[in-house]
Length: 168
Image 1 (cartoon, one colour):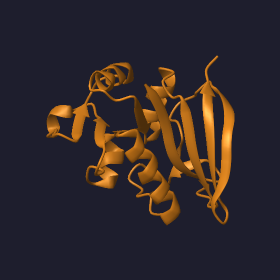
Image 2 (image 1 turned 30 degrees about the vertical axis):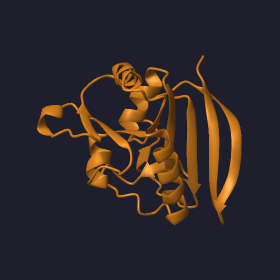
Image 3 (image 1 turned 60 degrees about the vertical axis):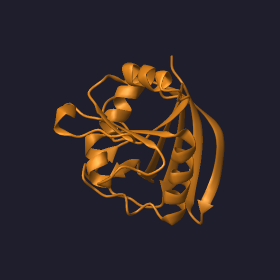
């Protein structure tokens, strides 16, 4: 299964000011691209704080929400709450017939997948903003090399960088 981490970040590498910061700073073009990429993948994997910030399941995709307390939530056809580790989630998605998933944060969930060496690609939108402090892409140290596959200007000043992960 191919896992692609899709994130918007500021020029100083922050994905949010804090863990409930709504991503209203990323722009319409980024939101449109995010929808296209995640709908094509068919699955979005996120943490419960990210899900809480969004406030509802993303339509036309299976929403897999990682939480320490899945019993607090009600799963449905397009919404799964799970305390499974990343490798088990991938196995369950493959068993359901999925071949790709979009990892959409936050930093803790990104770190769990990176630690398990399950992130294949990164699609990063770099927005010309500075937060100075806030949440980084990962919540803990990560050791991976990146191969730049493509780059483009999404709209003036906003870059999209597509990388492949290489783990030592």
